[in-house]
Length: 414
Image 1: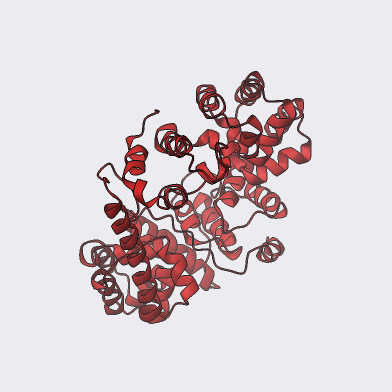
Image 2 (image 1 turned 90 degrees about the vertical axis):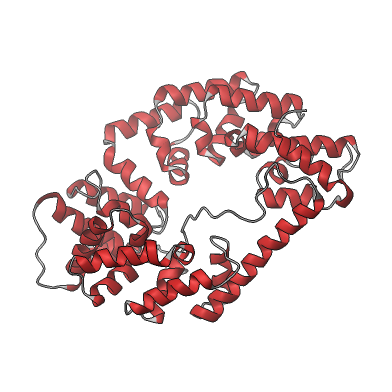
């Protein structure tokens, strides 16, 4: 196991991952209330103002580099320092050092917009009431900042404490059974560089794979040898898939893919991109191939789509047919454009495809697209963010912004 850990460490990227998935409403998010170019411009300026302020605050208050601050500002932003200052003051009152606070915020920036007293203060008080010392609180929260985002904080705290004690005490004896296996296995994952955001769910899990032993070692060895990055969710998914599936079941799935024209190497490359592909049933895999072939795609094109974007094999027949009908027959994009960007079959018709295509039709009708009547690339229309799309196709037409925004927010096919 130790040689495996050392091998895995060499596979970890040197730059720390900022991977908090924070759902923060950007000021550029659009609603049906937009009715003028002025409103749209104000929203853009406010969004950028918030990001600029956030970057400056993180650099000045926490000493972060501008590059790191800019990365965090894409996850969370604010326009004044009242709440962030309250959060930092709370941490300092509990004995956290500036270095620890910087580590916490870098890993879990959402804390800067949390309620310092009602949310964070209450949880820290709960830990104190359980007898946790100041040094224990600062060490554990610094090690696993996301513990403050959990409702069952005491359960997570106890689990994290066990792991830390096992790591730091040479005389610590692992408990018997699944709990001992869990501590052993999670410690191994931490040594590989797995971040707390991925470890937390495993710490309190009663399910596979972290409660096993021999099978865990074998599965972990395979995942590391395949080159999965321990700082990503793909690593966890791959570990779970290999742990849960027998060699016989895996081989049966490989046979199904080979019957469609994939090579064994193709199958494992697909697995590396999307580990969950192994759980897709034989029936669904074959049905997906049949659907695309019936729509006029060649077998080679189907293989290319799956290799480029494996999740497309899981899309429902109805969804694929509906989007193909709209994009190919109504919008007149050639099929090979979708072959190169199969992820479009997973986009929402109502929230993304139709609103954006309505804008294109409006521009085409006025001869305002750069290539005249030719449609732009699928990726430039459908694969970008709302902000990127509107910057590219709406905001540059100053006098038409109100009209185009009305079309965009209408959300129906013209």
